[in-house]
Image 1: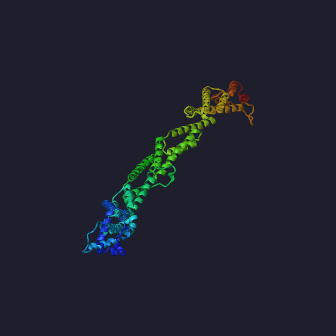
Image 2: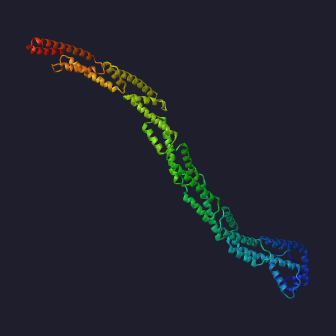
Image 3: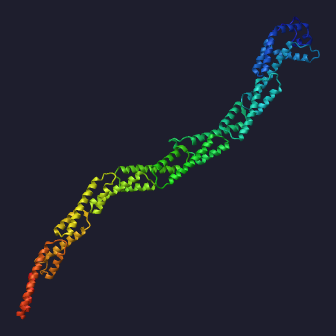
Length: 560
């Protein structure tokens, strides 16, 4: 409360502010006393005001607090500021303006602050959307132009912040325009996006940048998840990126103007894929001499193609089928070599191995097993059926070369048959070189046949025995008193011929000796008969006919 002199009672504030009354001595004395009482507080408030103006970062709330502090120092009602100060301003414009007092100066400053505060409140409310959220740069410029048009004595912090924000937005737009036409890495684009979000800027460049950053993120995600990441066994069945799609990543990166180390990695991966395809082509082109190292190399190529390259290459199924065929063949070969396999199975396995061009130890082992199987079949056939000495000797010679050593029983039987064959071959040679009886020869032939050995000259013995038995049967018929169904006996000439044949036989026939005795006796008798006939012819020529008939009867008797 401000005490007024008694003369001012009953007057209005406007009347009190009139110049004649204000210039009265009593009013001047009153103001002097008031200024003296408030001098210390006013001095401090003026110092705070000067400091705030020098700092230049006075906020709207700070300005309100500074006004409230002035009101408290002056001990006045804030509602009268614009009234009193208006009257002071009218005094200043009049020709009879008295000298301005310090109180009037302080009140004038306080009124200016209040006016600026009211204008700032209106400006702040009008541009709250620009100041508190994202806004286009045109709205920022308009709000700043409104603030600067008021020409306040105290530039508020909100205006300074808006001015700085506008400057940074303009700089950002320049940078964004340059970045749009140039390559940039992901970090630069994200940093530029963060700056725009921090500046709360609405601009087409911001939308384009946001779209570009999102596309770059998707590109990076595809590169890392679909191409560069090592494929697990579970992910092998998932759809993989083709070479065309991988090359498309490079095209997409160029369109996005993205500068990233991943582009070099994609190019390197495509280069690795090309080298891998060339190596696979060389490995699959080999049609012979595929050893265990080559098979392992194919398996490594397949593993790299499936797990490391992470591309859907056309060569992978072909290589996978080849590696699978190699693995299955080796498994099958192991099964065949572990048991008693049929020769047909061994032949089929070796044919498949030759088709695959394999040159592994299993091929040699299969060949040896096939030889062994063939040897077993030949040995069993040689033991079950008649076989010659060369065959038995060849089989016996190969018996010790069999890899398994499980054919000892067959080898023993072969050796036994071979020894028996050699024994009977020696006996056969002896029989054929020295005459033996037909009985011994027939027994030898029976023994050889029971041994089931084919000897080189066995047919000679068989023919000799057959001839001897045939001659023996003929001789027995001749020696019989009567032939079957005939009552005649052979003449001496026929007997002599039969005897000659029997003596020329390779074997000794007992009947030949008997026949020889008979032929000899008949021949002697014929000689004596001829002598008697010749001697009797001279004595009785007329009896020649009877003698001749007698002689014929004698020959017949001797032959019988």
